[in-house]
Length: 480
Image (cartoon, rainbow, N blue to C red; front, side):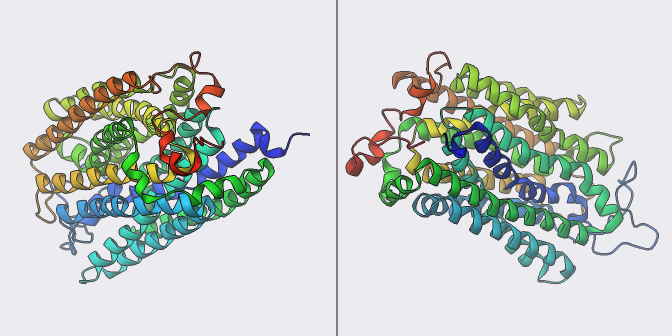
């Protein structure tokens, strides 16, 4: 009789709780984007001029808030990205050495701790402790959330490699983006009713949900691996993983990492400032309406990620999808920079290309590295991505200026920001074209179709990935 862990139903139950790992943390990640006006608002407002920005036009009203400058606000995102860049390399290696259960517990706890300190910092309005506490909270939150995504991807790759891999990656992205979408839909309304502080603590509560899911998926992963008889095998392979193996990662991997970095450089920094941009450039949008339109990037991703995963699982052609997504993103920032086409067109368009890019790029990593080093490879990819995103956030903050409580940022500054996004997208096209050229010379793994690569073939490691473990294991491939 087949073990329960061998059934499709078991791996999809694992996937369900694996998806919930990052639901709350993705909700918390973009809370500052929705509450940008409150974070940058004046510490005090003259009597009779206070306005919470839920009305139709807030350009003549005083918004009471925490008094951050645009540069300080963007630093909240930059420090998150930089922390990821440093921590995820070590985190990926530790996950490979110590296992998934260690990772999900430690890193989900860090998201709870970081979001709690960030919320606590909002209670120190007007004091010198406010910014250091909120930055510390984002630092710890970033340490946990970026690393938690690596564990999530590693668990997904183990249970679904050679099966419904892109679908599984698409579903995890959909659940994460569900948190982002609900943030853009409800956070502003919640803040208007209960205030900023309770809103931030509500986000922390959702991170606690992720911690409970982490405990659940740990048990399911442990029981399943024991039933499959693979627990000991994975531990033996993990002991042989060395940090020096990074030097032997294939060229295709590095080009894939650069493609991911440049694409995300145009997504995350844009979304962080999108609400304010829409209010400043387009007339007639309230803070709430602007947040809805900015959130359409994630709305589209939520609706399309699973379908994109199914399509890519069926047709393959991951490298071609990567080039196409980058090329089709160019018009998005051109429209935002040089036209007054309704912003919803651009945010939905960006959400569509983002969905297919995520479903094609990240699931390509397990195809070019062995399972035993996948955590390290994912961590390094996330690190490079976050270095790029962090630098982009800093550059955007510098472009938009440093004046606190500026009611309306000049249009020429926003235009320069969009040109910077365009430059990143062009770099993404160059990297993805190079990836396809190298991949074709080395066997065409990225663009192999489903018909041309049956499950048994996809389960084997590609030729340029196997040498990572050759020194001590012969030609060991993925145990999944």
